[in-house]
Image 1 (cartoon, one colour):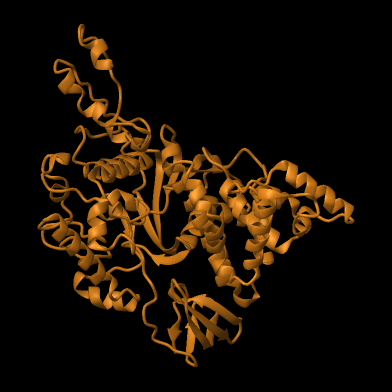
Image 2 (cartoon, rainbow, N blue to C red; image 1 turned 60 degrees about the vertical axis):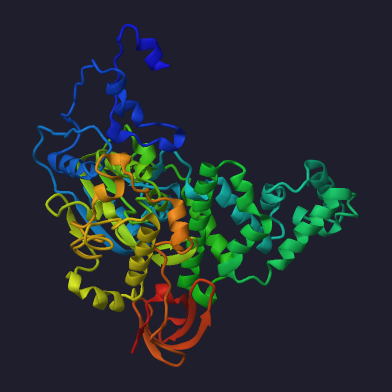
Length: 563
């Protein structure tokens, strides 16, 4: 349309930055900028490269990051403000420790809260940050989103859980009696309510078994019966498996998918984060934990996060929501491979470059100080997993980014490192998966010219994928997206047989201890292993600690050491 309107007089002006094109999923097309000169060959291009927002170290990092993209207009930002703190990256043991460190850093930074922002890739990541803010009594606001425990899908799942422990919670019942739709309308609920009152003040939940006597018939009566049977079947379900069971029996995910792929994915990520909260609760409380106690804890968090104490609040928001904004201090969190860049970005070069543009946008939100962080152990799909540091971080030379990994090693020490950290077999799995992909695609190498994931090592100070081994031209072709080789896509990963497992997934594997052995735990101290049970996702280990009592833990997360 624009071309047709401007074709005759060639009188058109376009302003934009291809490096900040981050809404591909909404239909935005970076080609609109990149192909402009081919449509209007006589146009004059003016590059606005001076930046008035950020310090030189921040811009230097941004330039190095975005230079990895092959499909872009060449430009380099600069600023007259040469001074500034060097950007730093810190890896933490877990996502929870990462969130705690970030919020403590904000508290102790010496800046006002409103001058500081935390940016993350997905909405679900706000949960840990919100809980830390509440724990430290730090005011916060979520811009462009809803507080975690106020999100519809979270309130739905919690409502299902609530009516299992509180037969008087009519609010929870009304919320989910038709989620997903069951054909139990307001007229049926009114009959149940009136009949319950005639029995001496029965709640709606308590009135459900008397649906026929209350006057319900046909589909409504049948669905109430099915609903009651479903609730009854959940009574003996282990707490750790309850959310999975709710999703399965209600077909909640299927109902979400009817809303649209993007919305469904985001909502399921939030539910998976709730599963992570539940697993953490079980880990911390063991046999002392219960559904009612868990709901009480969540209820407290939900009430507190609505408090409006002051206008001086830190800002929590997604990277997409941050576009166009700026803050003196920015924390960019969750820099793990498979999270940021997202796992989906592996499948096409276009998606990968869009993820890098998103990283670039996040970096350039910072005016004075920028801090990058990652948490190695995260709950993904309700399971604890160890994740690699983002390749976006590893791609950056040390001169532009001060990196603090949990482990620093020489490449020759890889096998020892993997063994000590419980990752034996993981490195070979990555290599095998990569070789499978290369074989399927007919490529000599997918990520580098002399090694599976780069020639200089797989983890540590030299980079998780090798700082010198990753070659964009091998993946994209020398002319950006015009490569004659197949791009990485979903089919390749399916054919390689790794799409189900995922490159970040890990289990505890074989344990070096057994029932009767003495072990030590970083938090609970020493104790005796009472039982080891096989779980569908990991091993459940029961330990009687000398001072902390009996605890049941997932082996991969407990990291018990045999004495």
